[in-house]
Length: 131
Image (cartoon, rainbow, N blue to C red; front, side, top):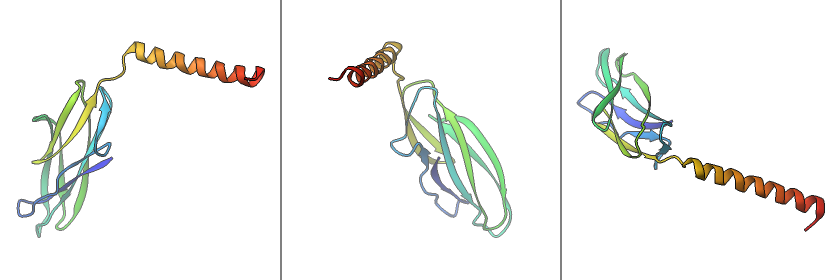
């Protein structure tokens, strides 16, 4: 899991978010990506925060937390996408990105499997009958 950044009351400016897998964050369609941020209460009293995850400017998830004065807490979200491309992650104004790549097609997978079978048979043949 990667760390997206620090969120604090408006008096402090948080660090940019991070995404996991770590940059370049690249997953296949349907795989999950984990995004986290640390929220710090820099005020002198207990405060509540709503942490909102947006992917491509669409709200995907939210978390509400209450922190004692000076306390910090990591907030983690997990999401996935079903379209290939670069996706922007926004947590309370701090942004990051991840890339979703096309999964290999069925024929590519069969070709890779068949290539492994041939290599295994070839290795066995060489061990049994010599080169």
